[in-house]
Image 1 (cartoon, rainbow, N blue to C red):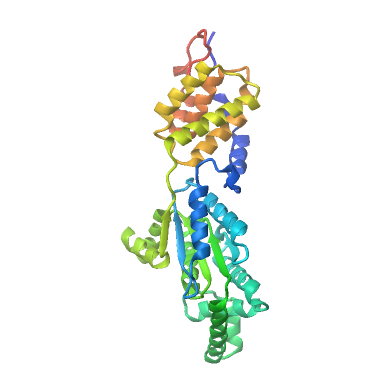
Image 2 (cartoon, helix red, strand yellow; image 1 turned 90 degrees about the horizontal axis):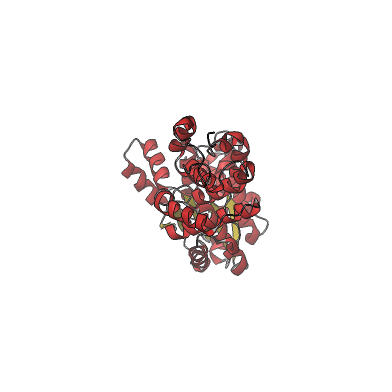
Length: 367
């Protein structure tokens, strides 16, 4: 009689697992749930932002990190600290450009959101601020917005007259904002998920409005990806893309790496929780074997918090599916292959006859 190796669980529940990962692999909202020590860094940065003198213009802060490093979590923690400790001096605008269908929608939504945020402490100026911001962007040809409110406004009134009128208004608003004790903190996430033209639009929008006082921008993205997108637009090398990025972001911060020991402890806790949830019991000898295998084989590939979270989610979903059908420790290890070594997992799955052996006292073979 041949033993069954626990490969089939992913094939049985591929659609469910995909849904599970996409819904549970979310950025952490509360510092109380900080598993990867992101809160101290985020808190210090938020306090620095709140204390920063932005009356001379808008500083642009970059939160750099690869996908899965926790950039969105850091933004959430920054927002939390600002709301908890600095709510009386800070107005927060959260903007995610990935949610908009095209460049025009993205641009319009940003200007409307910024105008509304400024209006919170200027009072009754939202329409004027929005027109000033949007019209100035079109007039200066920094961001083309064909068919926008700015373009229509230019058709109705003379360009020179309209510009002078709006420029006068703009200077008045700048004077009021410079005297304000409150500041707007603009949190922008997922820039690295946009296409090339949208990436440049967001960065140019930030550049355009950077001369407004009492506005602080915090941008979270993979700097390597964004630099490459900028380089492609300018037909240059990655260095030219990096130089363009440096003109936009004055204060770059790289998210601290998560220690591998912390990642190992995290996946062990998640594995134990998944077993408990499925009413499965493993003895300490099995857990010691898991830790040894994970440390020697998984940790070199386990780099980001997202990988660890996806592994934990996969276990919680998959273990009940094959309970009493396969050896649980084997299944835990195979799920690690699926998440961290997808090519190897596919090879083993498609060539399972090469890895099946007779039953042993322990059960199915550990892959």
